[in-house]
Image 1 (cartoon, rainbow, N blue to C red):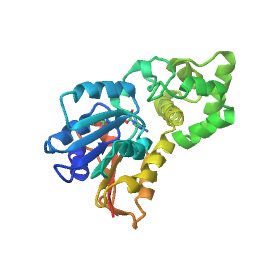
Image 2: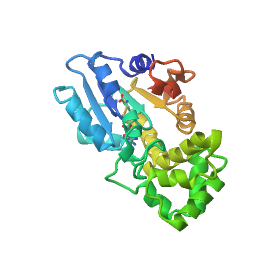
Image 3: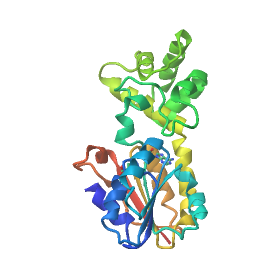
Length: 279
Ligand SMILES: C[S@@+](CC[C@H](N)C(=O)[O-])C[C@H]1O[C@@H](n2cnc3c(N)ncnc32)[C@H](O)[C@@H]1O
């Protein structure tokens, strides 16, 4: 199971200090605690206030866990502020959680009618609706192309601009309707998924955040400490793969990405797990 493989790579000493940069529902942290001794510690991070509230409650009685509401590219500051020693292992399980995807009010999925928001931290930045109301057609096309890897990006952007000229796009349903001319028939769901993924990456600045984390990781990790990353789409996975090629800094633990294709957990099936030890 991918969970077991992830824990095997992330947790090396029962009494170590570990960072879970993407707490979500707290699944990885809860499973890690079972392998850790009473003197171990986990610093858990998420940018999503709902995930943080959930995990504060879930781990309320657990002295080994500290839950922090921030972005993972704040890692270096976070460790400094707490005067913590270099961690033994850092885990980043990238992307969105099933809780976020399944919550209509967050607007992450074209399957549910809801506000067109798509922010992981709705207390900061602009919603997808705001961004789409002011971005130029060219910018929208670029985002659909680069972050959705969508070859119909220009046509999709044109649909959005035509629709917003009639009335603002406020809900997921408004966007689905606007994209109707490019997302129909057998292609419908694939096209919509690409456009929603692209918007999500843009409004959350996901790739910039990942780059910030990757830049800091070698400075903050203990020598012999590990960085473990689970990616769910090729844009992120390619970045991580390329990054770990720096053999002066990293000793690869996964020559090829470990894939969860046959995992009982459906979400794990699209995951690609890569890990390396800081030299
Ligand atoms: C795939 S889920 C993690 C699931 C978690 N490992 C579990 O076991 O439940 C990804 C989580 O990462 C969070 N996230 C995404 N980008 C982030 C960032 N830049 N900083 C902090 N958290 C982020 C999301 O809010 C989401 O809760």
